[in-house]
Length: 119
Image 1 (tube, rainbow, N blue to C red):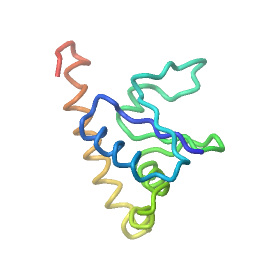
Image 2 (tube, one colour):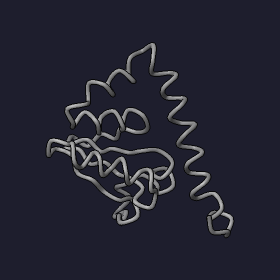
Image 3 (cartoon, rainbow, N blue to C red):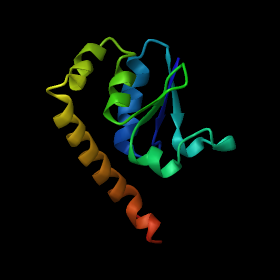
Image 4 (cartoon, helix red, strand yellow):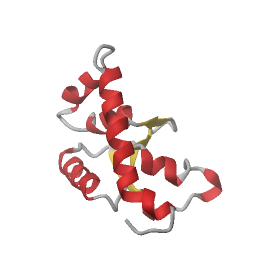
C-alpha cells in the first residue's frame, strides 16, 4: 500500500486529492502534510514535502515529484494515461513543467510566510 503526502492547505491540491479518493482502488493512503508529526526523522523535511509531491511506497521507497503523481494515479483506472508522462521522450519536458508549476505554487502559498508576511 502506498501513502501519498499532500498539501491539505492548497485548494488545487485538495481538488486533485478528492478526485483521487473517488477513483482509487483502495491501495492508496492519503496523508495531509500539515497533520503529520515527524517522529524520529522518518519523514522528509516539511518544506521539501510542500515543494514537491511525495509518495511512500509499500516497500519503504520514496517517490518524489512527477513520478509520485504518476504513481498515485496508477491506483486508478486512468493510470495508463499518466504513465505516458514517464516515457523517455516526454519525461524531461513534463518534469520541467511540473517542477516549474510546483515552484510557483510553493512561492505563492508559502514564500511570504517564510519572511514573516502572510500570503
